[in-house]
Length: 82
Image 1 (cartoon, rainbow, N blue to C red):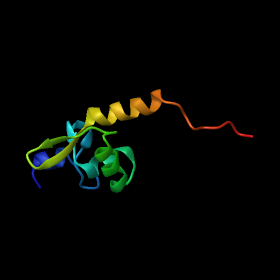
Image 2 (tube, rainbow, N blue to C red):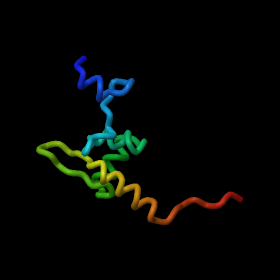
Image 3 (tube, rainbow, N blue to C red):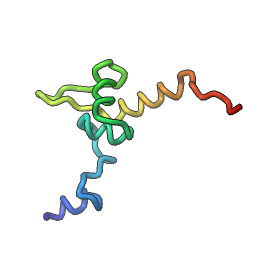
């Protein structure tokens, strides 16, 4: 294991996604704590913007933040407790 790998891996052997500019669909799903299928649906519907780099689909981290900001700005479905 080289020094770069050691510095950028967490205790589970995964990269530190906090410094990434773009994420794979799977990484974006993990970041939002949702399933891969739900993440694909959000991307395909345009609710979460993504970019194509060559033949690869990537989700810019800022687009996840924008998605959450839009959710916060919209109406909530939370009903008061009875």
